[in-house]
Amino acid sequence: MIFVEVHLDTPVLQEALTSNADVVVTVEEKRALPSGVVRFLFWACGEEFETFEEALNADPTITAPSVLHEVDDKRLYRVELTEAGKATTVHQAYVELDAVMLEGRGTNEGWFLQMQFPDRETFKEFRTRCAEVGVDVKLYTIYNQTDSSTEDAAYNLTECQQDALLAAHESGYFEIPRKVSLADLAAQLGVSSQAASERLRRGTERLVGHSLVERANK
Image (cartoon, rainbow, N blue to C red; front, side):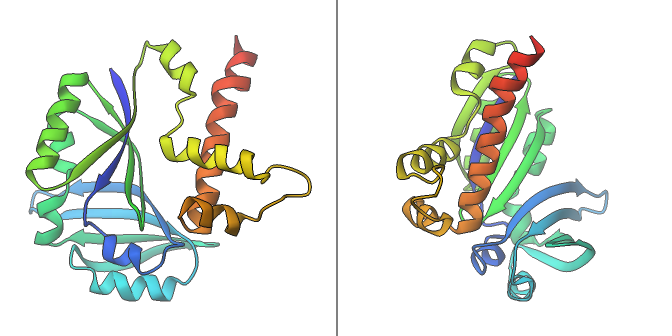
């Protein structure tokens, strides 16, 4: 069993996400119905939902968007993929290959997925199928379930999370008082403040989980 973290360059929801760089979506569920409809549920977190929803209605990869639930600054949406969306979705590919999507996150920079595959050959086949529909796959992290040394060495951080944490450390973001603001750090990384904040939060969470928590449990 292997675990991977990848970036997918797919147009699904990208028009909507590009309309508001501060909105980040997280996959709740994606399901192919017997009728051929591909239904997609996701949480959106951010601000300016009106702008996002206007772009959502115009996004050529999805149709029939509706809000199912709202909590604080998050909204749960349900959409269905159009034929254009189905043409570039990789959902069927990983289902047929017995892979599992552990986490899916979409931003204006594309889709970032954490996935589990039976073996490396299966992951290689997944990349081939993605290429066949014009979806580029950039690999960030890959490790075996039993390869604890590799995982521990890198703390299972993505390249983006490592860059964000190092930039924050080197620029004095963690110092008291801070030498740079979150907006300054985001500009340095070339991303939105929301994206920079999320990378720092997720990266810190993984560092703690793979160092302090695991050491305490040994």
